[in-house]
Length: 79
Figure 1 (cartoon, rainbow, N blue to C red):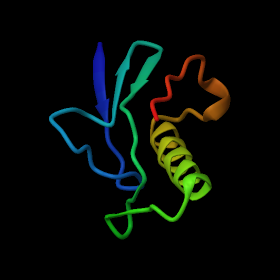
Figure 2 (figure 1 turned 180 degrees about the horizontal axis):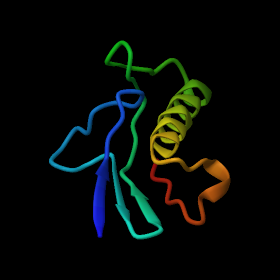
Figure 3 (figure 1 turned 45 degrees about the vertical axis):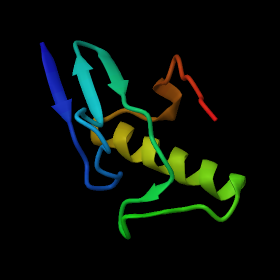
Figure 4 (figure 1 turned 90 degrees about the vertical axis):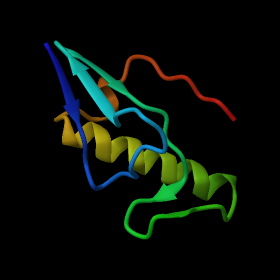
């Protein structure tokens, strides 16, 4: 059974996909960018701030699905 999970605490997807898709016990989170979900603008003050922004967005998505960062078993990073 598949379930789409969406939260306002992370930016809206920029394309035709979901923030998160849950399939059984598996959770698939879409790629995240450095957009502040409250202001809707890109956080681009430096690499450190951009990474923090992306990780906060991922944490918000995981929390919406009742998961946290310690549940992550694989991650792909593209720079």
